[in-house]
Amino acid sequence: MAHSDEAPPAGVTHKVNDGLTDVEAVALVVGGDGEAFGILIRRYEPGLLRFAMRMLGNPDAAADAVAESLVRAYRHLAQCREPARLKSWLYRITGNRCRSHLARRHTNDIPLDEVPAQVLADTSDSWVQLERSEQVALVEHALAGLPAEKREAFVLKHVEGMSYEEMAAVTGARIPTLKMRVHRAREALLAALEALV
Amino acid sequence: MMESHDETHPRLIEAIELLKSTPRISVADRVMAEVRQLPAHDQGGARRLGRWLTRPHAVTFRLRPAWTLALAAGLAAILLIPAGPPRPLSRPGAAEGIAQFVGHFPGARSVEVVGSFNDWSRGMLHLRDDDHDGIWHAAAVLPAGQHEYMFVVDGERWVTDPLAGRFVDDGFGAGQENSVLIVRPAAQR
Image (tube, rainbow over all chains, first blue to last red; front, side, top):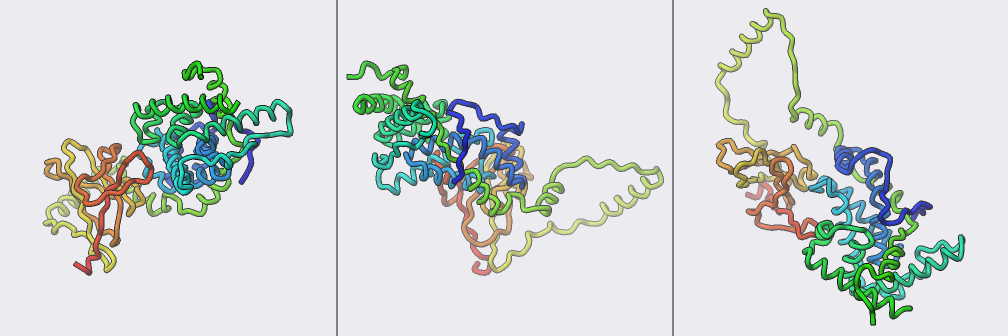
């Protein structure tokens, strides 16, 4: 597993200086230029890892899920019916992978002892970062207590910043259902946070 | 008791900001190493040549008048020769069979089949509707066994064949299905 020093937060546009749209990059890959798949990886890897990490609560499992999803996406890229919606397609594949992983655990919930306390920590810098990593661990702990469907809806909406239309494309669930899941997840997360503090 | 479940609740906003931190890991090298082990989507020069030959290209001939007359005479001779019977589908091998594709797409400008047998590549197997009744059909020799496929209508709309006997989830969630075709070896028929 390689480590990256640059990890832009959600909501930051990943400006990959290649000048290609998703449709153009997909056309290159499908046309035989396998290296062009690297453009798509650089563009979507941070978000997919963040999504998988929030779903699985374990960095190694998240890395496995995203790596397997990206290889699967490469193999079936010619089947991507709407390359303009590649982002939704990639999140859908990754979401399926995460669900399979959770199913193998025989529960949709993340065991609380699997939530690493310092997943995002970089403790060498300052007390501020240490404090922040503790706060992140606390929130992750609360998120891990939500059922997988609610956790997924909450993360896609509030962490990944997707519209309900995009979420429907990713999850296959109907928009009213997703709205209800997000609402319930907000309630449950707030309750969990208050109980933890 | 909580004061509010609204998404503007300060504690919720703070939690969301914390969750937006991105894990400091990368799988890019690992994925690209695996991708490089896989066959490229385009199988090389032969397929590119095939695509070039099946795409329209403008070809300009500049002929002297005398050659034009000779060429016209030659073409007339060719056109006067009676045409033979339609070229039959190539004979399937022992481990191959003939697959028939039929779809009802009234008003469609083009219909083609993509599937596991052609790496889901477009431009390789087109259906025809010679009498313009909306019934499009094609036949192809395929390896015996189970194949997944979809119709692509007008070059952009992917359609599951409603007449297929079997369907399988396309594996990408969202409840979309591929049609399934089972080709029997010609030798067993």
